[in-house]
Length: 290
Image (spheres, rainbow, N blue to C red):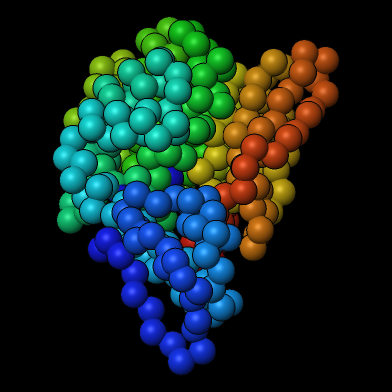
């Protein structure tokens, strides 16, 4: 759409033959390192599971503490780069230009790599998912191209798209919760994308995103920010030949799918990764908790 040296265990059934294993630095050890240590120093099954659980808990706590110290948008971008979640220079530049802090509701830590509730049973995706979708669509977000953001929410990705395609391009955000549309417009007005909103190359509308937004179509890039049970036909129809759509698909089990429309109009789809998004549904269904 963020995570003591030495482990002593006591058990009447636990016997460890000398020499004892070296102390474990849980802050530094990776899952692979922990597995290697356990292989070298066999423990009972229950003790092994407990040790791995302790390792995961400590690593999660360390990660949370690290993320809590990220205090600026620039530091967030650097964090994503250092962890391999952000590779393309153009995407890094636009994510640094569009300050996520302007789009996260007050009271949250804006630069934590985690999805956040924005009200109305909607969320803003984690920054690593934003960077992943931007990189998947980067070639279809060149200057002058057209992009559609379905379930535009806070307007963050809509603003990023607009900066990437520039004033000669066109970007439409579609969101079916009127209050979110109103707040997203305010967010964009405070961001680097404000001039594009003012001149009309960037628009945000209230509507059912499953139906797309034909006015700016056909689109070189379509992003869908909620999981559909199937790929909506209107979105396929509004995708330009040579265009690309990124959409999570599924109910309980979801995959981020990359949809390509070839120049002859044929469609190819491949799975990029497993994900977990809120459902793409009607306004009523969303407000009622799906």
